[in-house]
Length: 59
Image (cartoon, rainbow, N blue to C red):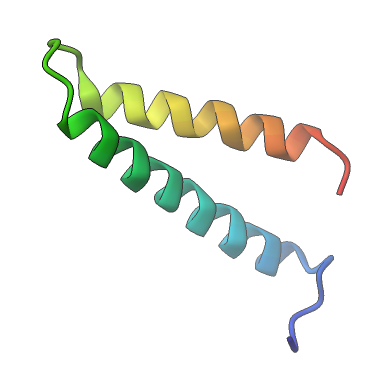
């Protein structure tokens, strides 16, 4: 791996990729849901909460 682990640009790219992956996984899970919910907003909120928790923790 040639990227510096503490490079802010790399961390931002990794964070964005993580956010997209979490949203995609949750969307797939919610696709099977039979209860009406605003699935797009729920997925974004869920992903943001996970992301905030990941950023809060020391690396």
